[in-house]
Image (cartoon, rainbow, N blue to C red; front, side):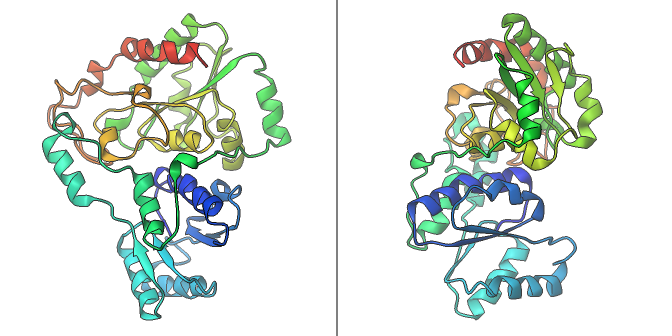
Length: 338
């Protein structure tokens, strides 16, 4: 069970895929928010169960009903990949029935120390992918994430027609927005970054990704309407995943779109602000050469927080130290070798 934001849930996908592939006798029942169902369609022997914990299963009474729904599957074990108040209550009910339960170690103390010391004086923490995998290892199951092999969803007629518009061109995804300002690259800088990359290579096309509510803001980043297209609100979630899976590269912030691309084996270049990869939330399988962040010598308190919801005093203009030119310089060789 994992009930949270898109990025956190997307991180479970390669872990559960590896679990199914490497443990042929295992049947998985995944419980999460209903919207995330398309992420799990390609995983063998996995049944997705949508659970709207904000309405249908809200409160103690709702969670008790959800426990009854979960128990109907007669689980031999329960994996709590979330470890919040709701899942603690569900764990208590399962343990009362004698069902073995294992829970993720989020490394809260380690992350608190990382924030106190700063990335400049720290080492990378265990990745969230491995923390998820550890829950299943504690149940006696085998998971080797280095053996993960992405599976791309089949294209629908709608997405095939759309992608056919860009035959012979390199399709680059860009998701410059994020939930918190300290993780979101400035719109003007995003527009300039796209312009520089387009000027450097004539066969590039950019697709902008974001929520429907972000469409107007993303529109301001279109530097060339013939080569930059805003997909916010254009496709439903399954179709958007189909398109993401066919990108040549995804450029993203510390946000969910980078994890979605990594699920399908798409190279992901991440831009970091007040958060840092050392906290364990980098997309799966990406080398450090595919990351860029402001100079830690000037901003030694990075990460200000694990999730980016806090900005250190004096770090409000942190993006001034990571101009589009610096990002473009690091991206040029990546794009040339796609």
